[in-house]
Image 1: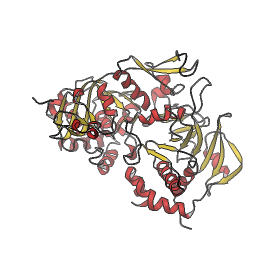
Image 2: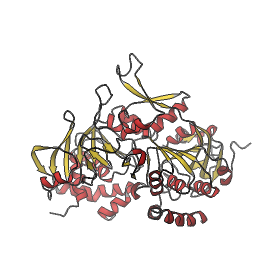
Image 3: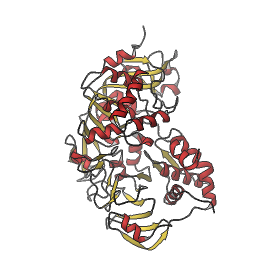
Length: 273
Length: 245
């Protein structure tokens, strides 16, 4: 019996429900852009994006297409190509709620879920306006007698469990183990998500666990609910170790998306290809 | 003497602040700090010294294997000596704002967000604030939003914090006791009067204020012949603009 469910891309898209809290990988971890394209075509609504810890063109496109009601992130940006224009506009006009965070807090909230504990402490952050506006965060005095500093205030972050996570990976083995390499934040995301789907460049007829070197690069199949082969599935974003970002295309997007009209024209073309 | 670009002068100026480090990390959107760190590493190599550089947005110049959280864990453990932070606004008490202008609930102009600043600013011993634009809109009296505060109460765990602020016109040192910047160096074409006019906050002026230093030929050669190509791996747009590669 096959050790994993091979699905079509549209079957994965159908797993995403309106209102879901969806895990969004950073631009260096394998952005599932082909999936995102189909998700926008489907017209999903009220998504809550949980970015680990940031999003680029994927988040900006989803926001500009009206699929998003809330974003929790440390940054939404087009990197070298400047601000994420649809995100900035949506926040300025109050169309979406932004839960401003900071990278280590976004990691820690998922790490709490990984360990199945209700919260995770984090140093720093206290005294920032990020902390001031996060009513779901709490500060306590360090309760430990022999660890840390006496009377030290410390920030507690709630555990966050994602409804669904989709990312794009270089390859999958015949048993459904996913090669993620050093992008271990994908494991954190997967451990903290109720459902995980992966798009991949190819399925290999080997077992990555046969070799210690490749075993260490894996996210085990036990966390995965379905896999779909999608060639060039991260384009125009990079797939680390496989292909680089298409900077010309991202630049083109960054210019077009400066206005809603320019964005709509760009998307019309993008969605039809 | 060869003509130097302003970016090259800034890279060299930053490099001078890194010479005592063992591990320098460079975060998002930081081509100039990235180039400076690699330059110092290369110079250290020539002196038979070891220096580690972690460029977050590079696959090649990156020491981490435990995912994106490792930078923050590593910094919290005290294993990173210098990190760079920027800001849409930086104020006279070294508070930084990476979120936007106007009141937070009715933001006028939204920028990307705080990234990891709210932890890194607390735990890395030498934080260098770097913001090219030196104007009353970037260097302000009071930031509109505090992504990370310039100083903290005594009971807060804070081994790290701001040490320097470099812009394309000047270098300031931060005085933790006085909670105030002190002007150390100005760009060759600048006057003190102009710096005062373009700085939105009040600051002290060092007795021995000097011009920014000019890199020697050896440094310029390393930068142009070696570092430029390394930078193009992770900031292709920048490398193309400055060095045409």
